Image 1: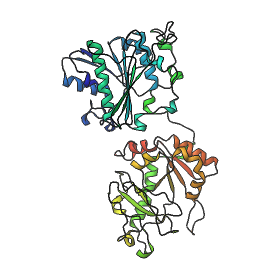
Image 2: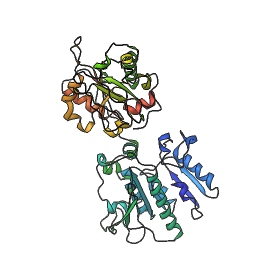
Image 3: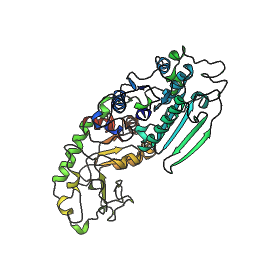
Image 4: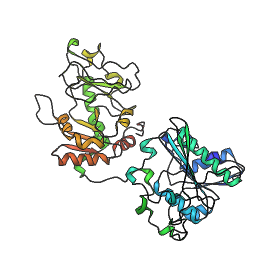
Length: 452
């Protein structure tokens, strides 16, 4: 967005962000940054990109972020404010500060393939954000780009429109979209405009007798009203399990690596006529390994998606095709352990790993990337599938009668703790959570792991 504002009408540009650094996963939608900017503070990187494009404009980076203490003063330094945040609380804070400082607010938002745009507090009758949304949504009902994803061009469309509205305000050209909400559907490339209510006389910020003012903003409890300011950074880590019920990503890596090493080095005699294998995908988009699960049936269950090739182990499936991550250091190459009808005799792997690894992320995230040998039971369905977990954990060999240890994995290590707690309360004894989830796996084991 800042590069869209490099117009002769904009003499001074301020870029505000918390002390957050550029990540590779940002680049598809945050075009002010490049690969050389990875690791730099986002505000500084964006400011540098603007200066490189137009040296006649004064650009200042505010790396302290915005909070109730500095919001009103910060907003007062500029003529127009553009809200590009991903936090419900920061939206209320910015709107209140703009009302207190008599500044128009151009607000944009994008998630998945949808976006919206509105201009608040501009003109005599245009409402503020608090007028339109007097009560915030529950935090659990709000979506983050980091969780739900966003198609890169969608925030580009919304950001361009935000820049257009800002330039119309400072130049006096055209008709500003005050009092309207513009909705963009990227799936159909359709725009819809909704007329908003006029300014609410009873509004706490812009009403006849405002209670939220320039001087009261620093003491207003925004966290109590609408949640933490750092909402877009993800939820705070939970701590509901003892350390004995948790293992590190590195520990899990060694467990998986040991099993795959044994699997790929073993040679088990088998008759081709007695094996029924998952058909090779016609499009080999995802490297995979094939692990035999049970011999109850010679007709494997397959999936519609040739790229996913995903089977949940059950009594009806003979083989389970599990996707491996794009790059996992020290784990045997998935392409070398893949079975086909001509190589089954030479590379048949053990019937099941000596553990059960459950990934409780949503199915769409699991389909993008998953650890070898993991099975997917989404968290929202987990409570109903505890009996299935007990069945999957049961050892199916004559030599052992006890169940396999269970490891539960999620994205951040919060939901997995709750799932492990539920299993412990259901009578499971050998069950552990993976600390920090797949984000910690990316940080400590495999930096190439996708941020899903």
